Length: 238
Image 1 (cartoon, rainbow, N blue to C red):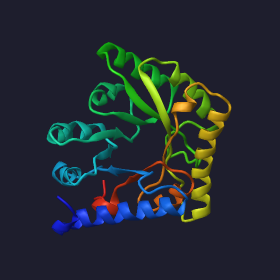
Image 2: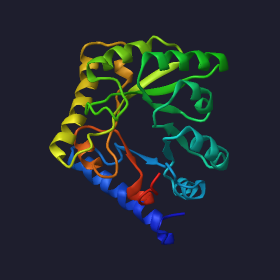
Image 3: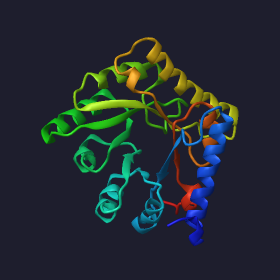
Image 4: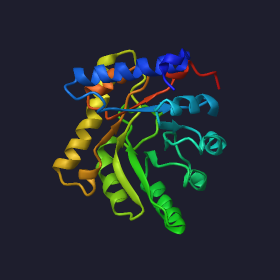
């Protein structure tokens, strides 16, 4: 299946992939260096399956209930799922076994509870440390000054592997201010490596940038961009 089928979703998907590659080349990196994660909140499983069948196999869910509801419907289509929303500790059991990566790890307490549940199942999990680079109270994530400490704490837990950092950009029309937040996240990663923080050498991913600002995120070093509305259209009000 390809964009040649004329389906508007696939046409948008291939256009966005081309735009991501163009921004990546503009940033001095090879095309394909940035992963496209499809943010699939509110998107029906059948529409997600269409994208998966066309070769776009990385998706991200924000809500535990949606993740559980879509899991069985998508089980037969090869793909990888990240959880990108805030995860409450009492819902850990509902995501374990259904995701390959938790991008929103934001506390030592959550990390320890995850590790304990994973140990009981004999499972492992990749995680990204979520950092609140904007300082907005509405956003989850550890404060920047505590990111390295959380990374080190995660590294000490045997069932978790830190693969990098994630952030949600500043909600602002000021592109310079948004980019400054992404630059901060990249700097935190680089500083962790330079300072020899345990686990930093393996924690190089930067998940940052969404439909409205992914080119700016790529310019500042994003390795994963989370795209929803640019592919699936505007979400219904919830």
